Image (cartoon, rainbow, N blue to C red; front, side, top):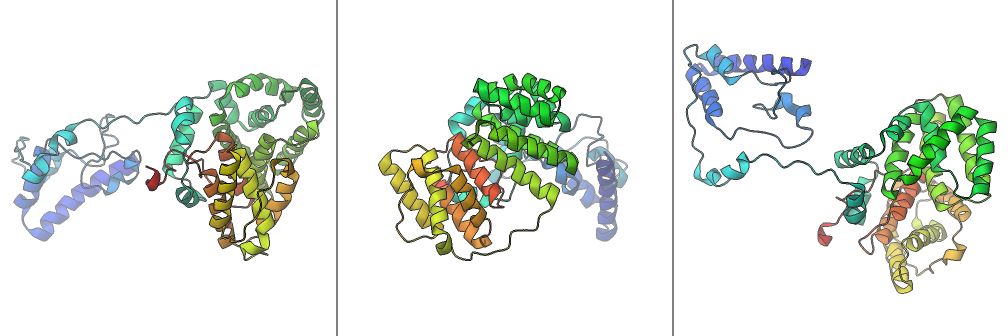
Length: 406
């Protein structure tokens, strides 16, 4: 409201300055009358139009709050300050021939933005372009933010509320880590009672049903919301929370892919926030020094996509080339792909130079997008790995489709 009020005063001053410098008030008034006579008007369709509204030549979006958010004064008032005899009747303005054909489409009401459902996301979101996904690393676009918000708004209200409150957000993540095996779940209950309290266990049990009913596509947006909320707890509270997460993951004496992803997405991000650790010193300036680690990483991504054997080998080799490795390496069999080994590989990859990391990411996205389709598991693993090597990336959305695939 303050910005709009200042903008309106600036418009009056601009009109006065125009008259002062041109010494031609009729010309300025006539231009404003023509603006008023153009029935099509002008309107910005972009959802962020209001942010730059104070820089437009005319009102760029519609407001219905008694003009409180109007960035420009009513044209009649502006014209009467220059030409007091103006009766408020605007002349009819004809469009030039080259614009006349566009007039019907310009008069149409802009189409409402489609809010994708979880089903939509599963059906048409998951096509991947390596080049576009690589450009998204480190850049949270407006489209990605809108996508996350749309998914979150479709979640149960109780779950959204819990994810936005620091104490309850802990329980949301605990619920995400809850094991389906009754024996393991019983151990996790004992861990929560010992490390936290009975209220934490009660709320975690309450949220488990809501979390388990969520479709896979909603997991990462929920984790991202929890991640942002937990930045507001104290360092001491985070240390306790971190220890609880580690014990919940270890309750079944093994680590699953989902647990691996959750740990890296949440703890890696929050460790960076709370512990302010210095960046990993660069030790590797060439992909050749990390060939075995990159091969293991690409093998993981290849197997997660569940391609046929021939397609798997082809995707893996394409990933090697995209990573800058010209040597022919063997795809690591799935039985030898251990998450512990991946952790060790990521520790080395984290010490790579930025240019090397860019090549590694390019190889990852090439493998995942080899079939032009990326599963939710692949998307989660890609983001966890990118976070683990200090190259955070936003969610993969529908725009990550290469022009050559369109």
